[in-house]
Length: 390
Ligand SMILES: Cc1ncc(COP(=O)(O)O)c(C=O)c1O
Image 1 (cartoon, rainbow, N blue to C red):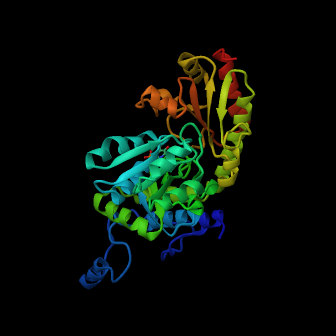
Image 2: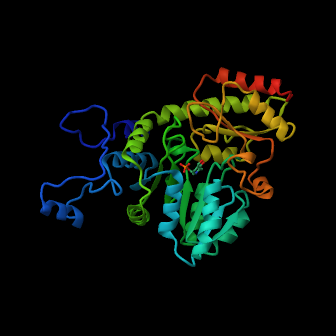
């Protein structure tokens, strides 16, 4: 089954009501016809739902669809993307273990690695995403987990999944990829050797900025500890959110195609504007990793970043002059969003750390939505003119 067909057609068995569209199973627990049957479920003699912290038909449907899309056999659904990342790290690491991570990770992932795990005796080496020698040196220390994002947030820098996966395997490390920016429609890290693929489903998977959610996918041996951790610690996905996310997957492919098309058009338009000093978008001719982008990504995705002429004052003036775009820190929505990373999503990093991720006071991140591209471009070029950025 192709991506789109699986994302639409994979559903649990229909109920006695013969519904066409899958219902929501808003139930905390599942009932038994006898004490013996309850015992059989709890002992594992009968497989099935027991309690929605462990599993629920809606989360199972979502996981099945995501497994299909990422071409991985097992998964768990979590309350948010951060719960997915935290559960993955907590389930696989113990005191004395080492993590090797990209320095260009989502800020809260870096927070877990730098502020929570050290107090549990787990150290992290951060590597500049573009420093190949640094990766080789750090991974030679045999970390338990290597964790990355590609494309990175917000700089849209790439790393070669096949190369890093081979390097991780040589050291016996688990290779984990946060695939939030690309989605499985655009990039399937498991095809390049990733052991674990993580998603913030809050972003493109929901696609309309409504619910939080997260997913961890991989081979059974990598997912089973994460399932056990979640089952006991409780950051499970609610059936309602799972239902929303599963419905959203039905349109993921068409949405990602349009997001990518709009983002590519906007990236080219910005590149030709005299008020913009640089644009980063994986499928632009000027992207330093265009060849790699074309190797591991089907399209360029819905996010781009650029630098304006001027300083923070100009960047704020520009943002305040927009009338159509939304000012918010989310991404992956139908609505085009502008974010000023230095003062919002990445404000907790030091200026040096921000510089390493390619963020300055004039960096803007656009999550390009599904509106007509003419309206998106007009709003941005009007705002550039109104704020005297030429
Ligand atoms: C790349 C990436 N990973 C993880 C997360 C965290 O996801 P959530 O907000 O669903 O916890 C985000 C959120 O922006 C993100 O951009």
